[in-house]
Image 1 (cartoon, rainbow, N blue to C red):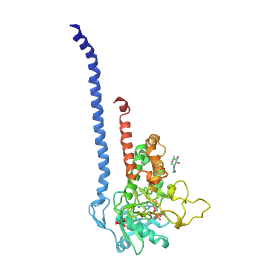
Image 2 (image 1 turned 90 degrees about the vertical axis):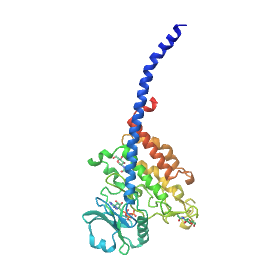
Image 3 (image 1 turned 90 degrees about the horizontal axis):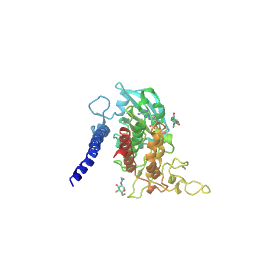
Image 4 (image 1 turned 180 degrees about the vertical axis):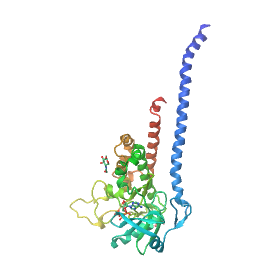
Length: 353
Ligand SMILES: Nc1ncnc2c1ncn2[C@@H]1O[C@H](COP(=O)(O)OP(=O)(O)OP(=O)(O)O)[C@@H](O)[C@H]1O
Ligand SMILES: *[C@@H]1O[C@H](CO)[C@@H](O)[C@H](O)[C@H]1NC(C)=O
Ligand SMILES: *[C@@H]1O[C@H](CO)[C@@H](O)[C@H](O)[C@H]1NC(C)=O
């Protein structure tokens, strides 16, 4: 009888040591988690700060660079007087884009090239005015009579050049799965913004192939994604039963969503009037292809792909109604980023806990 408590005690003693180290381990893990949380919340705050930068100026005004005060958008007179064209840096179907100078700052002057596309140009300008936010290139002025738009200049150009940019020595440190996933997150954030914009649900129609999609977005020098070309953004109004069509011509290929292709087979010639309209879920269909481009082929990008497999499969559902919303895709992307940062910071913690 005397021995029993002794025995229990002895049994207890060796167990005490691992439980202490386990507690220490747990404390260390919790501390790391807390640090990680602080790091992540700082990261999200820094994203949030960009958002308020635009908001600080009232409608019709802008500020950028080191300038503290908001200025009104430049008028025709101010543009003609104060803006000096330097060189052409881009040309699309609608606009010719000139690197220009305004008050010793680099800006971009876009001019209509094809007078048949006046409507598109003016629609793009209207959207640019209405959608100024952290997701959209900053508008500095415009002149409707002369069909010119003045915007902020981004030397890294459109996302089409991402591959090349990431191979410049200066930006090599950005060529990681982490940065690349963040670009994908920003891209999906833009789509989410357009799908729930102040004007309603807008569809990014200038998107019939990957190159086209990429050329509509700019990469800022601090590696954020901005939508630049808003010439083709029709409005879906579900409650009014209003759907859209991206252009009047037949669309083909795997890149566009199935509902954007002619449904009546090769024997029936394409006719715009017979082509059924569709909604913003065409943008969701394209997300996996665009994200795949962003992820590229660097160390870790295949692990990211693996984690995005299910949400991307859902984006590729044939029935548009079954595809997730941009918000759902964004939430999943952010979760995957958080998870992967956690795992990269503390390899093996999941097995420990
Ligand atoms: N603010 C800017 N900073 C740097 N490059 C720019 C800027 N704006 C436009 N560009 C370059 O010019 C190209 C064409 O611009 P934009 O897409 O506005 O023209 P567009 O005629 O509307 O094109 P699309 O044929 O797609 O309709 C862009 O893809 C980009 O490479
Ligand atoms: C980007 O670069 C990688 C490696 O240099 C290459 O494999 C890939 O095809 C490129 N993608 C595009 C779209 O240019
Ligand atoms: C959608 O249509 C309804 C009914 O016609 C209208 O009241 C509403 O303002 C429209 N919404 C948008 C965002 O245009």
